Image 1 (cartoon, one colour):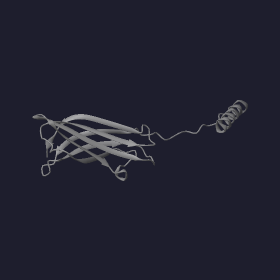
Image 2 (cartoon, one colour):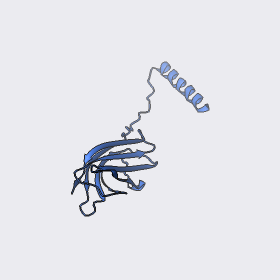
Image 3 (cartoon, helix red, strand yellow):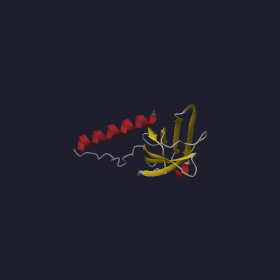
Image 4 (spheres, helix red, strand yellow):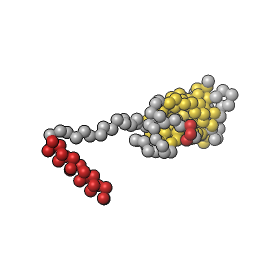
Length: 151
């Protein structure tokens, strides 16, 4: 409350000075143009040597922030011949490996199925989330349905 009162009094005083002298008091320009946090999913390819792994292309962009950040990618695929069988996996990238410097980043994230092997030629749902606490907005997500292919 005290800071608000001091700021109001100071602003009023500066406004009064411009009226007396006729010269404008320059305002501080905020040169920081915050980069919005975004994430975009690309293709997903099954590893031919390890069919329980899928490689997902992810692009993201986030501004510089000193707080926690993360990148999480999930894949879910239903077996069209066995409705009770669902392959599912998720990967969370370590905070130190998530680069937030205001420049576009490209990553290939490996997601290991926790249940069954991935099926080539069958659609899967990909989900990616990037969070950057302290940035604006603090998180972004993308999801899409793609057909998994084999490398």
